[in-house]
Image 1 (tube, one colour):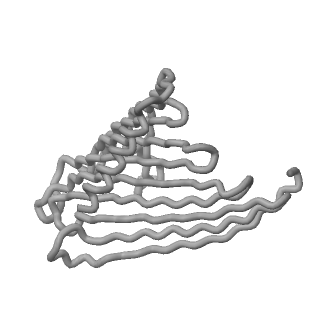
Image 2 (cartoon, rainbow, N blue to C red):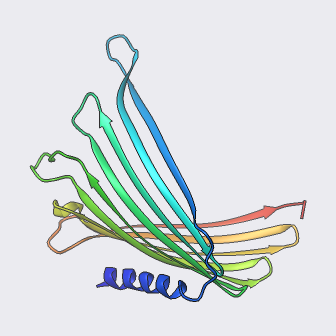
Image 3 (cartoon, rainbow, N blue to C red):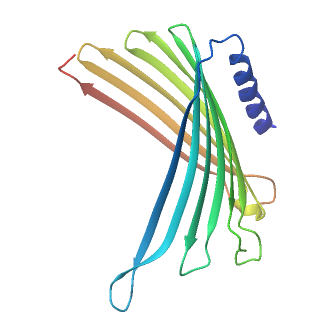
Length: 220
């Protein structure tokens, strides 16, 4: 229920922001990455290549003041030479930002990732999983050099093994203010994870982080 509401709200926000805007031509960015790993041979101490990862991605960004839209697609494949642990994933993310005057900026994002392993785990179950996520954020400019921001996002991982199906939520907020050469900032971030479904032995976990910083810039 919560997952459907969050994704529906983000989609509706994106659709509403797309009407009546001054559209510009989109900017495309394509990238190919290759990475190799190596491990030490136990007999002679030499390094032997043991893995290779290939990744291709495409990013499209389109500005339509006062909004902007982004779409990212990524496919990655990792092969191991010494063990049967090959896997690949495909990921898609969409993000939207909308400025309402000089004071308020809103953002929304949705995405999904499917990861396939091609082999079963020790219990004979598939290790493949599907992850869905969505989030909302807002930044309010209270005065020149002073801003307040907040965000919430959710992630749902679906797997054949019930203990690996989880739901996670993140909330964050921050305050920053500049006075002359000094800038003070305070932030909070909380991460909460729960099992997805009933009858699962794995318990809930939580992680909270708070910070405060002061910066002095004599060049201002």
